[in-house]
Length: 373
Image 1 (spheres, rainbow, N blue to C red):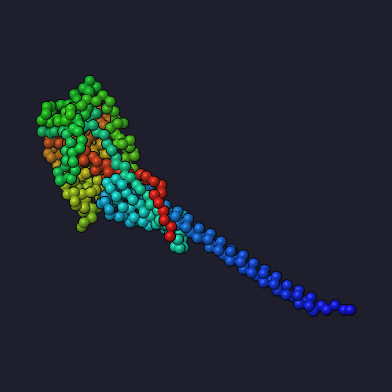
Image 2 (image 1 turned 45 degrees about the vertical axis):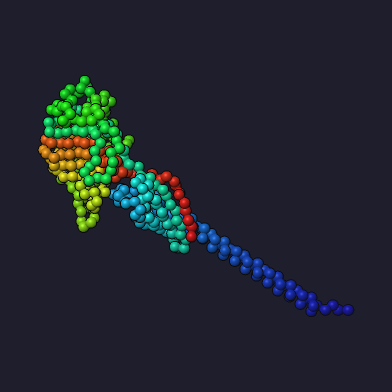
């Protein structure tokens, strides 16, 4: 009897169709899973790219700190920033906000190359001021001549119109090397009419050039790198430079304004570095003045803050005034002269604000927090 093959062929066809359907379904599922994995991978890469840009933006503010702008920010007022990484796609933006005298908050938002992922991170920054330890209103390593109309006062003073308090105990008026080491240390002035402090004169056998050419561990080379203004010496008449309501900090002879504290240049405390001998023909300024040479003043000059001189100080004429501290290394042991009517007064407030004006940031936490969205 002959078997029928029709049913067998029908079953085989049915099984083949079922297998094809199952294989197609499995292929579709595989494709969908692959597409999902690809999307998740791209999402993962984009998120990390955005986070990397956010962190790079926050650190960019720290490594490219602009003391002329950032150190002058009022408390609570944000300063915006933006940029792109030198290598790789995406960008960053954010704000820097001053939370207190020395504390700042950086909030940076990073975006990936396709702008489909954003991440935000924050850093807490502390400003490290340049802290000087003058130990006297005027420190001079070599011999010094003080005219009868000049005065040096180590008692703590507040500059006129400044909002600060006296918190320091009196320092010495004049700090010098002992007379046994240098002949004729002081001439032309004696007694309480020109030297005041606790004591009026401090003889210090440890005075050395390296100590008097450093601020907070920073030598002259480092100070030049930190400077807001680097000048080549010569003759200068500094004073505030203002256009409208803007303090022109790029001007080499703009050293802030100690007279109008609420004006455009009242909160500008630059670190000014002179690479050679400097002659000042009057004017005014505030902050930190570093002279890699001799400093000569003809009269009518007023400076509030710290003055650091590698060579000698020669002040003559009328109306010269220093509030803060003056340190003269006198590297060649020549004679410094304070003639005419020159006044040097110690001021802890002036030194503090000058140090903050030249301060640099320190990150307290590498990543304060981050947010993905």
